[in-house]
Amino acid sequence: MKISASIIVWNEEANIAALCEDLAWADEIVIVDSNSSDRTAEIARRYTDKVFQHEFRGYKDKHEFADAQTSGDWIFWIDADERSTRELRQSIEELKSIPDDRRADGYWIARKTFHLGEWIRFCGWYPDKQMRLYRKSSSYWDGIAPHETARVRGQTATLDGDLLHYPQRTLSDHHRVLDSYASLAAEHHVRSGARTGFMTLLLKPTASFFRTFMLKQGFRHGVRGLIISVSTAYGVFLKHAKVWEAQNVSK
Image 1 (cartoon, rainbow, N blue to C red):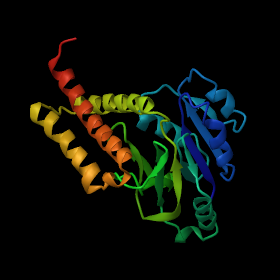
Image 2 (spheres, rainbow, N blue to C red; image 1 turned 30 degrees about the vertical axis):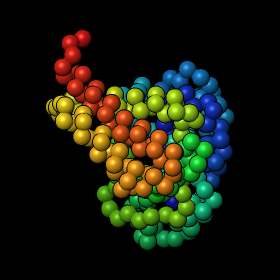
Image 3 (cartoon, rainbow, N blue to C red; image 1 turned 60 degrees about the vertical axis):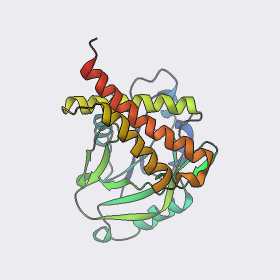
Protein backbone atom coordinates (compact mmCIF):
# COMPACT_ATOMS: atom_id res chain seq x y z
CA MET A 1 0.00 0.00 0.00
CA LYS A 2 1.95 3.00 -1.28
CA ILE A 3 0.34 6.27 -0.24
CA SER A 4 1.00 9.48 -2.17
CA ALA A 5 0.10 12.78 -0.52
CA SER A 6 -1.55 15.05 -3.12
CA ILE A 7 -1.49 18.79 -2.41
CA ILE A 8 -2.60 21.77 -4.49
CA VAL A 9 -1.29 25.18 -3.44
CA TRP A 10 -1.06 28.85 -4.27
CA ASN A 11 0.89 31.37 -2.17
CA GLU A 12 1.27 29.02 0.79
CA GLU A 13 4.83 29.82 1.90
CA ALA A 14 3.58 30.23 5.49
CA ASN A 15 2.15 26.69 5.55
CA ILE A 16 3.97 24.44 3.11
CA ALA A 17 7.02 23.54 5.24
CA ALA A 18 4.96 22.56 8.29
CA LEU A 19 2.62 20.53 6.09
CA CYS A 20 5.46 18.61 4.44
CA GLU A 21 6.96 17.85 7.84
CA ASP A 22 3.54 16.66 9.01
CA LEU A 23 3.48 14.30 5.99
CA ALA A 24 6.80 12.61 6.77
CA TRP A 25 4.89 9.32 7.09
CA ALA A 26 3.71 9.43 3.44
CA ASP A 27 5.54 7.39 0.79
CA GLU A 28 5.48 10.32 -1.63
CA ILE A 29 4.55 14.00 -1.62
CA VAL A 30 3.20 15.60 -4.80
CA ILE A 31 2.65 19.36 -4.84
CA VAL A 32 0.96 21.31 -7.64
CA ASP A 33 1.34 25.08 -7.64
CA SER A 34 -0.17 27.70 -9.98
CA ASN A 35 2.74 30.12 -10.27
CA SER A 36 2.65 31.47 -6.75
CA SER A 37 4.07 34.94 -6.28
CA ASP A 38 5.78 33.93 -3.02
CA ARG A 39 8.35 31.21 -2.11
CA THR A 40 5.89 28.30 -2.00
CA ALA A 41 7.55 26.26 -4.76
CA GLU A 42 11.08 27.00 -3.51
CA ILE A 43 10.24 25.78 -0.01
CA ALA A 44 8.32 22.77 -1.31
CA ARG A 45 11.36 21.54 -3.27
CA ARG A 46 13.24 21.11 0.01
CA TYR A 47 10.88 18.25 0.82
CA THR A 48 10.04 16.66 -2.54
CA ASP A 49 11.21 16.71 -6.14
CA LYS A 50 7.63 16.29 -7.30
CA VAL A 51 6.67 19.97 -7.48
CA PHE A 52 4.71 20.95 -10.58
CA GLN A 53 3.32 24.17 -12.06
CA HIS A 54 -0.19 24.01 -13.55
CA GLU A 55 -2.32 26.91 -14.74
CA PHE A 56 -5.39 27.33 -12.55
CA ARG A 57 -8.54 26.35 -14.46
CA GLY A 58 -10.62 25.38 -11.45
CA TYR A 59 -10.09 23.19 -8.40
CA LYS A 60 -11.36 20.02 -10.07
CA ASP A 61 -8.90 20.36 -12.94
CA LYS A 62 -6.01 21.10 -10.57
CA HIS A 63 -6.82 18.15 -8.30
CA GLU A 64 -7.10 15.81 -11.28
CA PHE A 65 -3.71 16.98 -12.54
CA ALA A 66 -2.17 16.50 -9.08
CA ASP A 67 -3.57 12.99 -8.68
CA ALA A 68 -2.28 12.07 -12.13
CA GLN A 69 1.28 12.92 -11.04
CA THR A 70 1.24 10.46 -8.14
CA SER A 71 2.86 7.04 -8.36
CA GLY A 72 1.17 5.44 -5.36
CA ASP A 73 -1.81 3.14 -5.58
CA TRP A 74 -3.46 5.19 -2.81
CA ILE A 75 -3.86 8.97 -2.58
CA PHE A 76 -4.12 11.09 0.56
CA TRP A 77 -5.45 14.53 -0.36
CA ILE A 78 -4.71 17.34 2.08
CA ASP A 79 -4.74 21.15 1.91
CA ALA A 80 -1.85 23.37 2.99
CA ASP A 81 -3.75 24.70 6.00
CA GLU A 82 -4.54 21.24 7.37
CA ARG A 83 -2.63 18.86 9.65
CA SER A 84 -3.17 15.24 10.65
CA THR A 85 -3.65 14.15 14.26
CA ARG A 86 -1.63 11.36 15.83
CA GLU A 87 -4.80 9.25 16.01
CA LEU A 88 -5.37 9.68 12.27
CA ARG A 89 -1.79 8.75 11.42
CA GLN A 90 -2.11 5.68 13.63
CA SER A 91 -5.34 4.67 11.85
CA ILE A 92 -3.56 4.93 8.48
CA GLU A 93 -0.62 2.84 9.74
CA GLU A 94 -3.03 0.17 10.96
CA LEU A 95 -4.74 0.22 7.57
CA LYS A 96 -1.42 -0.46 5.85
CA SER A 97 -0.94 -3.59 7.95
CA ILE A 98 -4.12 -5.38 6.83
CA PRO A 99 -4.58 -7.38 3.60
CA ASP A 100 -5.64 -5.36 0.57
CA ASP A 101 -8.87 -7.31 0.07
CA ARG A 102 -10.00 -6.22 3.53
CA ARG A 103 -9.59 -2.52 2.76
CA ALA A 104 -12.39 -0.29 1.50
CA ASP A 105 -11.87 1.73 -1.69
CA GLY A 106 -12.04 5.09 0.04
CA TYR A 107 -12.00 6.46 3.57
CA TRP A 108 -13.86 9.38 5.10
CA ILE A 109 -11.94 11.52 7.58
CA ALA A 110 -13.50 14.02 9.99
CA ARG A 111 -12.20 17.58 9.79
CA LYS A 112 -12.13 19.94 12.76
CA THR A 113 -11.72 23.68 12.11
CA PHE A 114 -10.04 26.29 14.31
CA HIS A 115 -11.69 29.66 13.71
CA LEU A 116 -11.87 32.91 15.67
CA GLY A 117 -9.67 31.41 18.38
CA GLU A 118 -11.73 28.29 19.04
CA TRP A 119 -12.36 24.79 17.69
CA ILE A 120 -15.76 24.89 16.00
CA ARG A 121 -17.89 21.83 16.82
CA PHE A 122 -21.28 23.17 15.74
CA CYS A 123 -22.58 25.31 12.82
CA GLY A 124 -22.37 22.15 10.68
CA TRP A 125 -18.56 22.41 10.75
CA TYR A 126 -17.86 19.17 12.62
CA PRO A 127 -17.37 16.32 11.92
CA ASP A 128 -17.43 17.63 8.30
CA LYS A 129 -16.36 14.23 6.96
CA GLN A 130 -14.28 14.35 3.78
CA MET A 131 -13.17 11.70 1.30
CA ARG A 132 -9.41 12.10 1.72
CA LEU A 133 -7.78 8.65 1.40
CA TYR A 134 -8.71 6.60 -1.63
CA ARG A 135 -7.55 4.07 -4.20
CA LYS A 136 -6.26 5.92 -7.23
CA SER A 137 -7.85 3.37 -9.57
CA SER A 138 -11.30 3.81 -7.98
CA SER A 139 -11.38 7.59 -7.67
CA TYR A 140 -12.72 10.53 -9.64
CA TRP A 141 -13.42 14.20 -8.97
CA ASP A 142 -16.93 15.65 -8.98
CA GLY A 143 -19.06 18.41 -7.46
CA ILE A 144 -20.02 22.04 -7.95
CA ALA A 145 -17.33 24.75 -7.89
CA PRO A 146 -15.68 25.65 -5.63
CA HIS A 147 -16.47 22.59 -3.54
CA GLU A 148 -15.40 19.80 -5.88
CA THR A 149 -14.33 16.68 -4.03
CA ALA A 150 -12.85 13.25 -4.55
CA ARG A 151 -15.32 10.39 -4.92
CA VAL A 152 -14.83 6.65 -5.24
CA ARG A 153 -16.51 3.80 -7.04
CA GLY A 154 -16.77 1.07 -4.45
CA GLN A 155 -16.92 0.55 -0.72
CA THR A 156 -16.17 3.35 1.73
CA ALA A 157 -15.43 3.46 5.46
CA THR A 158 -14.43 6.02 8.11
CA LEU A 159 -11.03 6.34 9.76
CA ASP A 160 -10.52 7.29 13.40
CA GLY A 161 -8.80 10.60 14.00
CA ASP A 162 -9.25 14.10 12.62
CA LEU A 163 -7.79 16.47 10.12
CA LEU A 164 -7.10 19.76 11.87
CA HIS A 165 -8.03 22.76 9.74
CA TYR A 166 -6.47 26.18 10.36
CA PRO A 167 -8.11 28.47 7.78
CA GLN A 168 -8.07 32.25 7.42
CA ARG A 169 -6.47 34.11 10.32
CA THR A 170 -8.80 37.15 10.30
CA LEU A 171 -12.33 38.01 9.27
CA SER A 172 -10.88 40.08 6.43
CA ASP A 173 -9.12 36.97 5.12
CA HIS A 174 -12.34 35.00 5.51
CA HIS A 175 -14.28 37.65 3.58
CA ARG A 176 -11.82 37.48 0.67
CA VAL A 177 -12.25 33.71 0.49
CA LEU A 178 -16.05 34.07 0.62
CA ASP A 179 -15.91 36.49 -2.30
CA SER A 180 -13.65 34.19 -4.33
CA TYR A 181 -15.82 31.13 -3.66
CA ALA A 182 -19.01 33.07 -4.44
CA SER A 183 -17.55 34.08 -7.81
CA LEU A 184 -16.63 30.49 -8.71
CA ALA A 185 -20.05 29.18 -7.66
CA ALA A 186 -21.85 31.97 -9.54
CA GLU A 187 -19.89 31.21 -12.72
CA HIS A 188 -21.01 27.59 -12.49
CA HIS A 189 -24.66 28.58 -12.00
CA VAL A 190 -24.56 31.02 -14.91
CA ARG A 191 -23.05 28.37 -17.21
CA SER A 192 -25.73 25.89 -16.16
CA GLY A 193 -28.50 28.36 -16.97
CA ALA A 194 -29.70 28.90 -13.40
CA ARG A 195 -31.53 32.14 -12.72
CA THR A 196 -32.08 34.16 -9.57
CA GLY A 197 -34.35 36.98 -8.48
CA PHE A 198 -35.76 38.92 -5.55
CA MET A 199 -37.20 35.98 -3.62
CA THR A 200 -34.06 33.88 -4.04
CA LEU A 201 -31.91 36.72 -2.76
CA LEU A 202 -34.24 37.19 0.20
CA LEU A 203 -35.09 33.64 1.21
CA LYS A 204 -32.00 31.51 0.55
CA PRO A 205 -29.63 33.55 2.76
CA THR A 206 -32.31 33.70 5.47
CA ALA A 207 -32.74 29.94 5.34
CA SER A 208 -28.97 29.49 5.45
CA PHE A 209 -28.69 31.60 8.60
CA PHE A 210 -31.52 29.72 10.34
CA ARG A 211 -30.02 26.36 9.39
CA THR A 212 -26.51 27.25 10.61
CA PHE A 213 -27.43 29.17 13.77
CA MET A 214 -30.45 27.16 14.93
CA LEU A 215 -30.66 23.72 13.35
CA LYS A 216 -26.89 23.16 13.40
CA GLN A 217 -26.64 24.81 16.82
CA GLY A 218 -24.31 27.64 15.95
CA PHE A 219 -25.79 29.51 18.92
CA ARG A 220 -23.77 27.20 21.19
CA HIS A 221 -20.64 29.08 20.13
CA GLY A 222 -22.11 32.44 21.17
CA VAL A 223 -20.73 35.39 19.24
CA ARG A 224 -18.49 33.11 17.18
CA GLY A 225 -21.50 31.10 16.11
CA LEU A 226 -23.37 34.26 15.20
CA ILE A 227 -20.46 35.52 13.09
CA ILE A 228 -20.14 32.16 11.31
CA SER A 229 -23.89 31.96 10.67
CA VAL A 230 -24.10 35.50 9.28
CA SER A 231 -20.97 34.93 7.16
CA THR A 232 -22.40 31.71 5.77
CA ALA A 233 -25.66 33.45 4.89
CA TYR A 234 -23.74 36.32 3.31
CA GLY A 235 -21.78 33.84 1.16
CA VAL A 236 -25.08 32.44 -0.11
CA PHE A 237 -26.42 35.95 -0.76
CA LEU A 238 -23.25 37.01 -2.58
CA LYS A 239 -23.29 33.94 -4.83
CA HIS A 240 -26.85 34.59 -5.98
CA ALA A 241 -26.24 38.34 -6.24
CA LYS A 242 -23.34 37.64 -8.59
CA VAL A 243 -25.60 35.39 -10.69
CA TRP A 244 -28.18 38.19 -10.86
CA GLU A 245 -25.46 40.70 -11.78
CA ALA A 246 -24.12 38.51 -14.60
CA GLN A 247 -27.61 38.13 -16.07
CA ASN A 248 -28.95 41.65 -15.60
CA VAL A 249 -26.15 44.21 -15.62
CA SER A 250 -24.49 45.15 -18.90
CA LYS A 251 -20.70 45.35 -18.76
